[in-house]
Amino acid sequence: MKAIIYHRYGTADELNFKEVEKPIPKDDEVLINVHTASINSWDWDLLRGSPLLVRIGGLRKPKFNILGADIAGRVEAVGRKVRQFVPGDEVFGDLSGCNWGGFAEYVCASEKALSLKPTHISFEDAAAMPQAAVLALQGLRDKGLIRKGHKVLVNGAGRGVGTFAIQLAKYFGAEVTGVDSLGKLADLQSIGADHVIDYAQDDFTANGQRYDLILDIVGTRSILDCKRALNPKGQYVMVGGPMYRILQVMLVGPLISMFGTKKMGLLLHKPNKKDQNELMELRAAGNIVPVMDRHYPLGDVAQALHYFGEGRHVGKIMIHVK
Image (cartoon, rainbow, N blue to C red; front, side, top):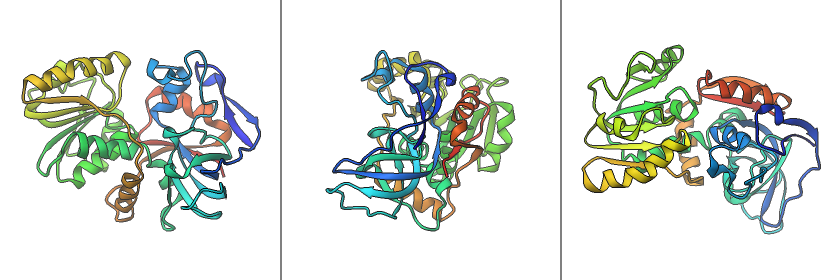
């Protein structure tokens, strides 16, 4: 089978489009003929070996030689202990909790990571949602405790998680402000943002506005600056950002939360089939729509990751295997 392989951390130039052996499913695994995959920030971090946390289990070289977590495709074979799926089933899921490997024609995954794809949902939509949409949902609902009427700010709103977060926050009845670069603001408004901020022209932590919930996807402001932009009982939830910001939230956030009314913390990603299926229902009802920027064939994953690293994309970058 064809796959995108890498053996050492670095840039997208480390990626090679090669013929490799087709995987064989273990007893509790499903072999999937991948139709579509999508890029997430974790793919970028694992490629570069940064932040250090992604090197757990692979300190000097990658533990997983094929990137790609979000996939959709058809079941080709199942292990003898698999009970939920049969060959021919159309499935989707987030493989970051098991063995990655989505940037390939075939991948094996635990049945626990997969859900049945509704027949009326496209492979593209299904592959765009598992990780980014779940992060947005868990950040807003579970960690951020979003409520109707809340004023919500999404920092890094033009990215995959951010575009889902805007739509989900509106679904929950919030007033939403999206922060990103000037070229993305019209897109944010088109998917429901009530207000938009060009981060190059306006510092959202210093303009006097206050929010009930800040969902921070990029970590461009310090935790103390973000604290200033919260209402007295506001919630700050970091989803992603540079390692020094993540460590700051891990160390300082609990202290702020313990000694004040504002709560500040880090969202720990938890792949979750229940959440994936709930989001698929919202997609079917038209409450959320994946925003897709560019589409690349499997052989051009290196080019796709170059583009991802530039940060100019809006929403998801899709990889078409079939």
